[in-house]
Amino acid sequence: AQKITQTQPGMFVQEKEAVTLDCTYDTSDQSYGLFWYKQPSSGEMIFLIYQGSYDEQNATEGRYSLNFQKARKSANLVISASQLGDSAMYFCAMREGGRRALTFGSGTRLQVQP
Amino acid sequence: GAGVSQSPSNKVTEKGKDVELRCDPISGHTALYWYRQSLGQGLEFLIYFQGNSAPDKSGLPSDRFSAERTGGSVSTLTIQRTQQEDSAVYLCASSLGAGGVETQYFGPGTRLLVL
Image (tube, chains in turn cyan, blue):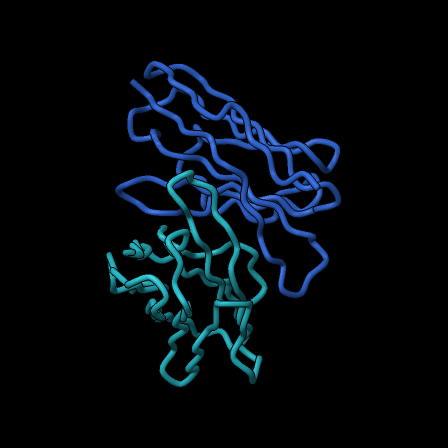
């Protein structure tokens, strides 16, 4: 079974609108961390936001927020007020238990239209 | 401050040759990671270093792949007898290594093409 599933290969959003990128995960560990990274066409992976499995509040970082639904095992990324510079690939990743390795989803390509 | 740096940025080699890829982590980061990003396999973990030791090598795909880290800083990923399926972007990341969230910060990658 896939550990991280991103079901949207591509998404379009109008500039200034909000967009939600989906991520579901599968783990039997009680302790885990979920990360979102952005990869522009330049190729570098840019850390956006983190949610720990024991965190009671949804994480927020500026225009990024994470809609964490533990019972559903989902960790969707919400980008508010989209900007043209948000056009990129977005990856959801998980770190399980004591492991340091990240397991990545297949990514979602977001295109922001003017 | 300087981020993670990798060299070379691009490497073209012939099948059967050996290649070395270098990673220089963020200063003060004791944990270092190698990942591979390819069209067919997505982003895959290869190896994790804490200091100079590698407690997790579970992602190395074959014994042609090896990595070392010296002085708790620079790391080299070596691929021997390269194959065409080794063509990918090799990404290095580092983190503080102190436990907790351990956010990994990535370098720009080395794009490897095996002809």
